[in-house]
Amino acid sequence: MSEIKTVGVVGFGVMGAAIALNAAGAGYNVVYKELNDELVASMFERWVTKPLSKRVAKGKISQADMDQLSGRINGTSLYSGLKDCDLVIEAAIEKMDLKIEVFTELSKACRKDAILVSNTSTFLIEKLMAKVENPSRTAGLHYFFPANINRLVEVIRQKETSDATYAALMEFAQKNRKVAITVKDFPGFAVNPVFIASYVVLDSFYGDNLNAASLESISQEALGLKFGIMWVQNGAGLGTCYHAGVSMAEYLRDNDTGYPAMCDQLKQQFESGQLWDLEGGPITEDQAVRNEVKDRLLGAIFAISTHLIEHQVVSPDDLELGIITSLAWPKGPLALMNELGMTESARLIKVAVAAGDFKLPKKFADNDLTPWELNK
Ligand SMILES: NC(=O)c1ccc[n+]([C@@H]2O[C@H](COP(=O)([O-])OP(=O)(O)OC[C@H]3O[C@@H](n4cnc5c(N)ncnc54)[C@H](O)[C@@H]3O)[C@@H](O)[C@H]2O)c1
Image (tube, rainbow, N blue to C red):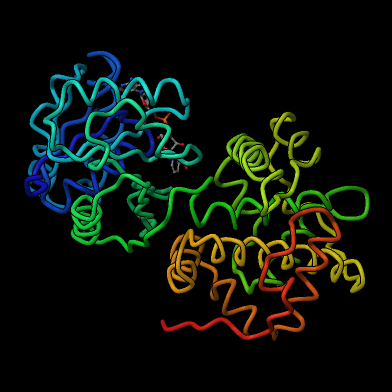
């Protein structure tokens, strides 16, 4: 395994292009692969030439900076164009069969010691790498939207990932000025299982008594957020939120963790083509109603967070760091549990269990009310 100097990116869309610009900005040479030569050219225009020219026009960067940055990024429509890469990051569309095929091709076209990673949001890394020769060089590298601004990266170690691969990826993340957390190969990894559960539960209250503005306000109050969970869903796209929620429930609902079932409300809203209407008040001031929603929301967040720790998906400190960095919550879920007290946290988790959202984590089944030990 050689030092990472040249980075390949498969798929130059929203994520791939931002990942490439990030790496080029950190001094790496980047080769991206698109489906055909037309897309190679049009995607470069869309994600590199246009936005960088705008920045030059606004005086944010010089023409020389732009030339240097864009000069480090080259495109290809062939897998053989990636043969000199030390690391290849796959950011093609979220389809399992397609990703497996991409990695089969990369295994043939790239050097046998090149590190191969996926930026998948929902698939297990182990499955995507099933046909890769020497899987010890494979892992996940999960960026968050928008990948040039959001500083979090989850480095996902699958069973086969070697220590050398893991160390090289941690160093790569650091050189890209990212905050990296270490995560086990688990459905959705660490941050998304928490975030997705929070919006599925919140959306399930949408209806005659509770409009989107009220749910937004309750989520802001419960978690101390400037921009609440309904707002973030609008930004991410309700289609993306819906599909991710369905996928998480498929993976985990019958598992020992449990997971909230997809609610009709989010499905209908996404199918209507409208975003959540955050201006369409009035915001409910009925404290009993607000508390009911708040309890279910916090209960779900606390239950999945405890399950993630118990399944050793992520360390307590990395979970906190991941949530604070990627979602801009002022406090991570474990610090929030400590602050509310474990007796109250246990009550909230039992609310989530009674609602069928989650199974009872072992810590609370054992009535262990010791606070979380957090270092950072
Ligand atoms: N958008 C997000 O918020 C987000 C966040 C984290 C992770 N992800 C993951 O990142 C990946 C990419 O998502 P996106 O939003 O950038 O999608 P996108 O549709 O914007 O981009 C995907 C690109 O991949 C190209 N492509 C498809 N098959 C290819 C192939 N065989 N070879 C080369 N290029 C190919 C497409 O032409 C397209 O330009 C997905 O796996 C997604 O789940 C997305």
